[in-house]
Image (cartoon, rainbow, N blue to C red; front, side, top):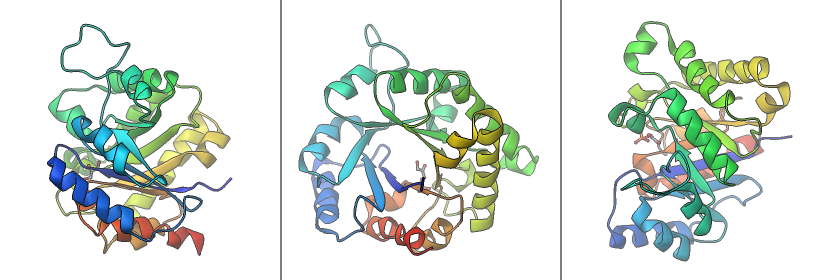
Length: 254
Ligand SMILES: O=C(CO)COP(=O)(O)O
């Protein structure tokens, strides 16, 4: 089964309601490949999710940027998976490196979140990736494997999981991983899944790349055999996001 190209836009903690409407209007008017070729998911901050969902073209979908690790209740400031389901928000991003680093989310905590969100019926974009220090120490694959293992230990059905490989040193820095660097980790990660989960999960799970993806570098990155799409930060707030969605065509013609 072919892995459908996936392009996520992570808006992080950005935007006003006016800006959000403008971005959505631009995307709504864009001519992009059909849903059979590319799955597009936008992730605005929580407060804008209902607005974005209400005005967004029906072939694009929305994701929350986080959710609570278990059933909602007395957890001030948190938003539960149940609430996302209640509002028909199909996707959630979990384990983003900004949350791992700034909010001390451990591998185990992220694994628990992924398992809980999936059990509630959400689809999950699970982020993994090494810091520059870890890469320079030669431990990239150990780090990525440990992050993925914490998920694999808790999840048996991978059909609603997309893995986002986001090297921390490439996020928001303009220092994009080279296509060969991205392909190397994606290939290793797929081999890890084959060995530790199953051949089927390895063959069908989409592994997308994130970290300084833009309109200029997306085609070459997307052309790599094991790069199944992108999770885009900064450029997802700009019209060039449309070019990144169109990079799905490189797989169609491959
Ligand atoms: O963190 C990212 C997406 O989740 C990547 O961010 P940038 O595209 O801004 O580097």
